[in-house]
Every structure is written in C-alpha cells, then in structure tokens.
Image (cartoon, rainbow over all chains, first blue to last red; front, side, top):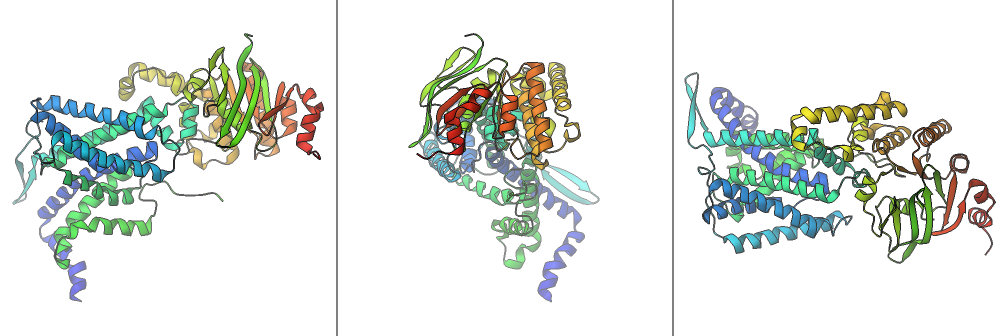
Amino acid sequence: MDTLADIFIDPFAQMAANPVFLVKVIWEGLVAGMLYALIALGFVLIYKASGVFNFAQGIMVVFSALTLVGLHERGLPAYAALFGALVVMLLLAIAVERAILRPLVNQPDITLLMATIGLTSLLIGLGEIVFGGEPKTMIPRDLGLPSGSIRLMIGDRPLVLQRLDIAAGATALLLITALAVFFQRTRIGRALRAVADDHQAALSVGISLNQIWIIVWFTAGLVALVTGIMWSAKSDVSFALEIIALRALPVLVLGGLTSIPGAIVGGLIIGVGEKLGEIYWGRLVGGAIDSWLAYFIALIFLLLRPQGLFGEKIIERV
Amino acid sequence: MSNCLLAVEQVSLAFGGVQVIRDVSFDILKGEIRAIIGPNGAGKTSMLNLISGLYYPQRGAIVLKGVRYDRLRPRDAATNGVARTFQNIALFKGMTTLDNIMSGRILKMRTNFLWQLVHHGPARAEEIRHRQFVEKIIDFLEIQHIRKVVAGKLPYGLQKRVELGRALAAEPDLLLLDEPMAGMNLEEKEDMSRFILHLNGQFGTTIALIEHDMQVVMDLSSRIVVLDHGEKIADGTPEQVRANQAVIDSYLGVAR
C-alpha cells in the first residue's frame, strides 16, 4: 500500500503544497521541451519533403554550432560568424542534394538512411579536421543573448527564471511561427507540402524537386543552428552534443514523423513529463529517471496511438 | 510543320534488359484529341511518362513546340504547357480540393515570397486572381461541393476529377490523360467524356489520352496510335485503326 501511496498520492500532495515550485518545474520542462521540439522539427521537415529519416540531424546541430564558434575564434565578429554558419549550412544543403539525394532518388528508404549515417561520420570527421576535437564555449553574450535571472514574487514565494531560458523559448516560438507562416502562405511553402504528399504529382505541376530539397535541408540546417546555440549556451559545444538527437526520437514517436504541430506538442509533453517525473517520482527508483522516462512516455502513447498524436493515419486499401 | 505541337522521334526506352519502347515515332497536332491504345504492357504509360519528362529515352528525342529535347525534364515539360493526370491518381492527399487545384498554378505565380509571407500588396492581388481562375475550373468540373474536402477522403471518381482540375489549372497547351475513365461507371464516363470534348472544343486544348474503353476512344479521338510490346503497329483515324489487320490480331490474338 505504501508504494501505491508513493506513486499516486504523495507526488500530488507535494505539488499542492508548493505550487510555485510546481510552476518552476513545468517552466523548466517547457524550455527543455521547446528545444526537443526544435530538434524533432528538423527531422520532420526533412522526412516530409524527401522521405529520409535524417540520421545526421544531431551532428548537424553540433556542426553548425561548431562552425559558429570556430569562425568567431578565428576573429570574425559574432554576427558575421552567425551569417558564416548560415552560409555553411546552405552549402551543406546544396552538397547533400547533389551528392546524396539526386543520385539516390527513388532508391529504397534504407539506402537513404544509410547515406545519412555516412553523412554523420563525414561531418564528425570534417568538424574535427577544421575546428579540432576539443569542446568549445558558446558565445551567448556576443550574440546578444541575455544572461542572469529575474525574480518574480508569487504571493510570498519567489519564482526565479533564467533570462536565457526566456530568450530560448521566445526564439523557438518565433522560429516555429515563421516556418508555419512560410509553409502556409508562400508558393514555395505550397510546393513543399506538395512534394511531401506526392513526388510524381509535384513534378507534373512543374515543381523542381532539387530546389525544394535544398530549401528543406537548409531550413533543417537553420533549425539545427538555433538549437545548437540554445543548447550549448548552457554547456559546451562538443561532439557529445550529438546524442541530443536521441532525445528527439521519443518526441517523434509521440508526435508522428510527418507532423509539424506533432513535433512541437510532442516536444513539450516530453519536456514537461521528464521534469515532473524526475522531481516528483524520481526518488522512487533512485533517480536518473530522465534518461529513460521519455521513452516510457512514448511507449505508452505508442500503445494507444501507433501513428503518433498528429501523424497521418495509416490506412491501406485492400 | 508549324501545326505540330509535339513529336516523338524514334524513341527507345529500356529498363535494364527489358525493352519497353522500341523505335517509336508519332506526332500530336495542335487542337486534336490523340489516343494511345494497346494491350496491357504495350508501353502506353511509359510513353506518357516520356512526354511529361518523368523518363528519359535511351535513344531518340521529344520535340516540344519545335524544340528538340534528348532529355526532356519534368520542369521543361511543365513550363512549356504540358500537364497530365496519372493512371493510379497522384493527388496531394493531405490537401483540400482547392489547394490541390491551386498547386497546379504554382508555375504561374510570380510575386516574391516575402510579399507572400506578409500576405499583402501584390501577393494578395495575385492570390485572388489565381483563386478566381481556380473557381472557374471548379465550376466547370462541377465539384463545388467538395471544394474544402481533403482529397484523400474523396471517392475515386471525384479524385480523378480533382486531378483533372489540377492539370487544367496550369492552362495546358497539351493535356495528357492516363486512363481518365478507368474504374468509372457509365454515368461518370459520360461526364468525363463531356469534359474532354468541351475542353477540346471550347478552349482548343490539345489532348493525348490513354484509354481502354474502345467505345470512348473511337468516339472521342481524331487520331489513334496503337502500341504493342513497345512497338508502334498502327497510326491513323479511328476508321483506319479499326480496319487494321495488325491491330485486330494484337487485340484478339493470332496463332503464330
């Protein structure tokens, strides 16, 4: 009976006892979730448009952040380095289209998946050769990101929020809104949705697949760069960051591989779920719950909705 | 010959060791309804794919509006007024009927994407203009009631009609139809025949179509190409083709 109480009653009693702390935990979860959502968004964009599960998304996060810091180290001002990193991501998109997507068009999915694994190795090697393998420090201050924290008083209890977290949340929100508007309103956006739906039909109305692929991979690169900056602002830019891509997997399971809103909502659910689980239920299993809780949440959703929250229903006519 | 919209010149196509099309030539004249017929596996759809740029021939060339292409790309075909439908329907299933048909006008949209982003100024005017054109197509095809329905949820016959609408949105000079009547009941076939005749008669759209229903083919088309095992075995008016011994043999089978 004690165990049941520990699981189902105690945590909620704690939440009720200190609601300001609960708000803080949820806030931290949302901030982490926003970043998960961004990573997942990179996967979804590429998967929708080119049908590839891009294994290299994680390394693209590292590589773009590394390029930014590396260029800054070589004496470029921060904003010039930011622009430089964007140019590099554009070149990468063009190279990927030329060297991988174009020759491998209409090949089985597994071939393309393998190609992106190859791309991962290539980018790790390239990054180490050009910028060295040592961890680097992100330059949030030079990029104009705020530091420090603000104190809000809720009743008589203080709530401390990191300025950087607020900036990260706002940037992610802005980026996602901008992408949504871009996809809904512009001709390129419509072309992109068309390509995502049916390659042959898209070709028949005169859409250039090659152009769309470059745009999509560049957009994924842009998202990777933003994720890289936000994530590494708290720690370092190192190749170990690559594993944050694994954080996006449960998000993708939850949100569906084909849905942009799914990636966002999925990211937030996982982020908040992880933090709540870690704080209120973590001690029951001796902590370290955050390394597997996301997968656990995803597994439960998978049992209930195999296509994900917003994924396309898989219906096959017989 | 200035009256020639498109010519296929001694085209051959193979996939690996399988010869799909062997040294076929024919032309499509402005304003005609040209049918391509033949038994299953004769290479009809491959021929349409060559004309719309989805396949490149190993030998031969496609001459479109007087320009000779060894490798005609899909975009070249589309920008030169070739639009098509597919045998197994290739709609954007996640989009509404309206969006599907609007996507057919992608090549006609000119304003800068920054204008489109703010949805104002020239972009707004352009969107409205295209929308009006698309509404005309919707009226013509009598699909007003499914304007906002997601295409993937429509029944087969209506999906075919939406696909035709998307092709029409490009204001094509040459419309390629791959089995437009397949799987349709008599009434739907009559509707589709009416649309095709109307398009050809009123707007002068040149049409090339693949169709298995011989009654439809004979009624609609001005000239017919007959393919069998990748080779052209006959080419002429419906009367000529009907009387052609090779065609009769290939359809009915002969003792060899």
